[in-house]
Image (cartoon, rainbow, N blue to C red; front, side):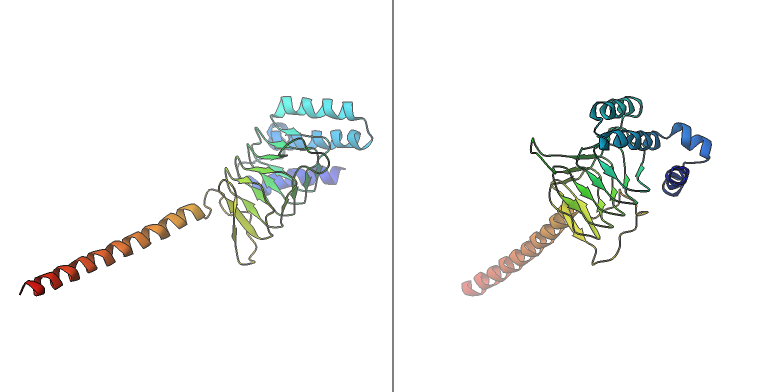
Amino acid sequence: MFKRLKEDIEVVFDQDPAARTYFEVILTYSGLHAIWAHRIAHFFYKKKFFFIARVISQLSRFLTGIEIHPGAQIGRRFFIDHGMGVVIGETCEIGDNVTVYQGVTLGGTGKEKGKRHPTIKDNVLIATGAKVLGSITVGENSKIGAGSVVLKDVPPNSTVVGIPGRVVVQNGVKIKKDLKHNELPDPVADRLKSMQKEIDALRGELERLKKEGAQVYEHSDL
């Protein structure tokens, strides 16, 4: 147990350059508090003490601003940075070395029964305000951009941006977790740039045809 607690603290130092001392991290990091409270709530949930589990999770939500359903399954070295507004649903499955930022929702899409929340594989980073909804899978080493809304499965080693989320495949190369999550490819902007180039080319062609037409008209008068 103490080894696991130490591991939770050390991942904070690995992911957050603002972390200075163990004392500061233990007392002031709400993401860490939420994870520890979830472990306790999840223990009671597995023992079918559902009411006690929910009371613990709601108390944690009140104190940290992070709502994790006690039924969610969370792996090792899970890091919640800042954390305010994070919501993790009952049937979520989260792997190891996953990082999420504030405002992230791992939720459902309706009132369906059974598995209705996402499965997040190992080494995934989910940036600020992203929404991953439904019984979908986010593959290993993938990255969800800030503000994205993801409604479909994400292949491994991918980056997703936009609403709805669009996958930008990184040619099978592992996406490093230290990549700045505000510097992501924007397929919409790329497409607009491509369209603008096509428009400029068409304008150039039109001008050329106009000049050729004018020259033909001049020669016909002669």
